[in-house]
Structures are given as C-alpha cells and as structure tokens.
Amino acid sequence: MLRWIAFLLFVAILEIYAFQAFKTVIKSRGFFVFYFITSAIALLYIMYQLYHFDRSIGQTPKTMMTMGLLLLLYVPKLLLTIILFGEDIIRFFGGIFTFFSKNESEGFLPERRRFVSQIAMGIAIIPFASFLYGMTKGKYNFKVIKQTIYFPDLPEAFEGTTITHISDVHSGSFDDAEKIEFAIDLINEQNSDLVLFTGDLVNTHAIEMDPWIDTFKRIHNPKFGKYSVLGNHDYGEYIDWPTKEEKATNFEGIKAIHGKMDFKLLLNEHIKIKKDDQELALVGVENWGRNFGERGDLDVAGNGLTKDDFKILMSHDPSHWDEKVQHDAKHYHLTLSGHTHGMQFGIEIPGWIKWSPVQYVYKQWAGLYSNSGRYVYVNRGFGFHAYPGRVGIMPEITVIELKKGENVA
View 1 (cartoon, rainbow, N blue to C red):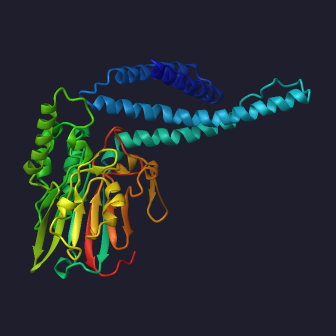
View 2: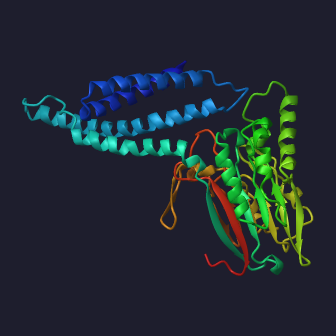
C-alpha cells in the first residue's frame, strides 16, 4: 500500500509542475481538457497493469507497453519538474529579498517566467520524442558494425576469417515479422565464415521462440558452422514456476531450440575448428554473472587447452571477462558477450561520444575492450526487453575480422 501511495504522490508532483508549465505557455481550454483526459486514462492503464502483473507469467507485450508509457509520459515531466523546481528555489529566495526590502509592489513570490517554462518544455520534448521514436522505429533499426582485431599469434590459416556475432534475441518481445526477416537477411548478407550467438534466446518461455524457429533457421550455415551459448534469461529464473518440473521442462525446451535452428549449443565445452592443418578453439560457457548465477565453468570448458592454443570464448555476461577471463592463465584471446543491451538507451556518436547509464554497472558494456592482448567484444543486442524500444543504442549485428599482426587501434 505504501508503494502505491508513494507512486501516486510522485505522479501528482509531476502533474502539478507539468500543468504549471503548460498553463504558463498554453491558453487553450480545449488543450487542457484533452490533456487531463488522456493523462488520467494513461495513469489508470499503467496502474491496472502494474497491479495485475503476474509473476507466474512474466513479461508480456502489455507489461512492455506499460513500461514504455511510464518512460514516455513521466521522464519528460520529471525534467519539467526539476527545471521548474529550480525556478521555485530562485523565486523563493527572491521573495525573501522582496520581503526584507519592504517592496510591497510585488507579492512574496514573483510570477513564473514564461521563457523558463518554454525552455523546460523544449527540453522535455527531447526525451518524449526519443522514447516515442525508440518504440516505433528504433527497436528495429538494425546496424551492422564491423570490427577488425589483430592478433600476433593468430594461426596463418585463419587470416581474414570473419565472424558474425549476434546476442540477446529476446524473441518474446518481437511484434514485426517483416523487420525480423530483414535482420536475418542482413546477417546472411555478411557471408561470414562463422556465426555465433551469445545467449538470451527468449525472455522466459521456450514457446516464445516457436513462431521464429524457421526464420532463424534461415541464417546460412557457413563453412565453420553456427554455434551458441545460453544467457541469463534462458534459465527461466524471472518468474514463479508452478513446479520445478515445469521449469526444468522449459529449460530443456530452450536448449532443444538451438538444434532446431541448426546451431550447436556449447555448454561448458569447446570444439576445434580446423583449416590447412591449423586450428583454433571455440569455447562456450553457460551463463556466468554475479547477480544471475555462476553456471559458466571456464576450467571445464577449456579442459585440455593450453595457453598456446588460439581461443575464442563465448560468454553471455561481460562481467565474466572483467572478473575472471582476462586474468585466466590460459590466455583467452577473444571473448564475445552481450547481455547489457547498452541499456537500449544512450548516446553514440563514433569518434565523439559513447555513453549510457549502463556503464555505471558494467565496465565493458558495448563494443571492443582489451587488456594485455586479451579482447572482449560486447554486442549491443539483437532484440529488446522491458522497454519496448531503443534510443541511441541500436540493435546490432557484429562482423569481426581476425587479422594477424599487432593491433593498430
């Protein structure tokens, strides 16, 4: 009950300040009738969905729409509130000055300044437009990002080898088959030598992938094959299952889907890829993350490998690389991860700025990072989760080219 009171109080404060801003700038009675009706309907919808959230089902299109509406409506109003509250502080101290100066020509608080409300509304419209774009266009605005990485000890036979890397499909969130088909075509257009998927096939349930199995099976099977690992969402940990047996059955179903898509699922194991009497090791671990279970076992997966073997590791959560992999004595040359989604929100201008709130949680959150000749590439994610959109951090298809030599970056 206290949470609902706090939520409604928070919303009331935002609405009061938003109304003051609109009232200062807009004089149309019709606008305010429309504004109050739509705001009330949106709030009732959000409260209804939050109240009826079912922990035995988990995320649904309706819950994602609820999150989208929360961000779309209240982040802009929060900015309005911050700016106008700042103005109120100035007005308050101005009123104190007026009181002690005995200037009775003015009231205690000066009136709101129109230009401040105009500035506040101008700033607030930026996140409103951004979240709206993210929900309608951004979530399927797939980007192919190409990255060349140099290794002095890369076997010569694998010079120029290309890898297409995708991660975080979250098929239960899809709502546009045409856009997904387009993304699969983009993957195939890269014509890479190896296709790797680093986990989070679904949000929770294996059946989420049923409509999309044939679509993802269309990903071409290149000469070195298609391989995958599991992510934190693939274990069914985010809902309350009726029985342990149902949870276990769901997990087995998720693992089986990889084979139906012609992907080889690696579960704490490795395989050798050979070319011209040379080889590289592809290692795949289960999910490893401090907050999501440490199922990944690098020792088991790399059993029999040596420091001299050239190794590519698939590990869903980049915190695994940060805490374990980069310090491992076996020297894992390249780790491919995902998980962060870049929070589906941020600012990226190549060569200028790369920022997202998720960087305060994960040290490696998007793109390439290195330490002493060990590299991790964090894919920004193929799908979306929770918020049904992407702002600034677009869905990614990564193409990595392996080259022999010293890295010039």
